[in-house]
Image (tube, rainbow, N blue to C red; front, side, top):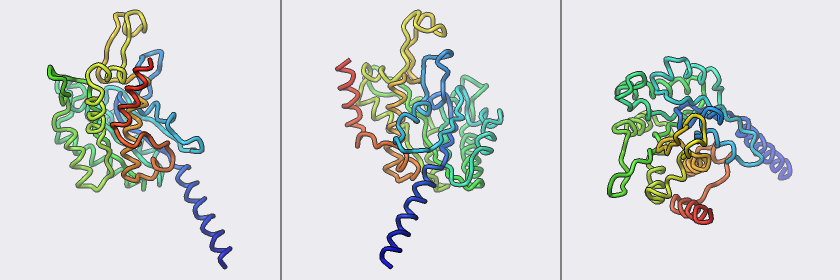
Length: 267
């Protein structure tokens, strides 16, 4: 009897593990998450580098629908959200990160009023659940904007708090990437934090012949480090897909910061 029970538990564990690994992580967001063609741009989205942080034995599929310059409104209008919903299957996880472009009041082609932004997030959550998949909300990642006193400046206004509201009201798991990325940038400071963002010297890339220091889009190194922030918080909140499919980052943001500083000092 004990042998039969042992065999049953092993079988159930293997089945559970197989089901976790068979899931798809579907991603919806903007340029900070997207896959970037290296011939078109020298930056990287954190979603693009997420596969490099998977466990070696994970068969998790990652499908990145994120697209630069899109807000919740334009992502829906262009039928990109419909493509996400069409792909999502029961048991999959859908991560949703918008806010950069929604908050861009000066760019009316993408701007989304706060009330509409919240409605769009609620719609996305509802439609993911209707597919019997699992939504995860992510606050927009912090831009590298320091003031004269070397303190980070918030560029997103009310939008991150609306993500938190929807998470609380709809009981949706949330990763507060604005908070964690802000802590990491603050730890690194104005100079060392440059390493996380795209920096191009004059003549280095045809898209930026005069060079560019970007404060929004990531270097390859930075995209990996932002991905670690997402994974750490997801694992701390026991979001199963991240717990079973990704390597465990440094335990704290302070430890991650110290590792980055050590790497930079070696370089």
